[in-house]
Amino acid sequence: MSKASYLHVVRVDVDPAVEGSFNEWYDQVHIPALLGCPGWLSAHRYVTLDGGPKYAAVYEITAPWAYETPEYLGVKGFQEFEPYIRNFVRLRLGPIAAWTASNEPGAGEAPT
View 1 (cartoon, rainbow, N blue to C red):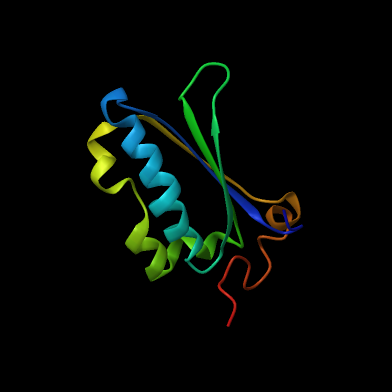
View 2: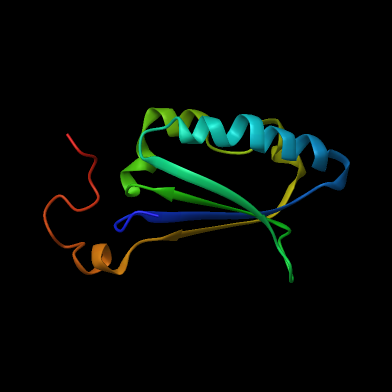
């Protein structure tokens, strides 16, 4: 992980009736689509060992502007699996250095 990156964490439960299809879509369609968006650097999926929700995805992004690109807005969400998602939790984390410098002009803006 690069020094100044941000983390985007998504946790969900999925209806067992579509769990296999969901995992296949997530790995083969959703993650590649997100990683094709400007500012989205890496993605890793996990299963929760304690408690829930069952699935977690951890993404490394360049900065908060990555949430505002047309590419991201076109692929975000769970698409056809939306009705089968439960207990959705999102966590956005930023580096402390960026947080303390967030009052500087241009903080969090897309590069030009």
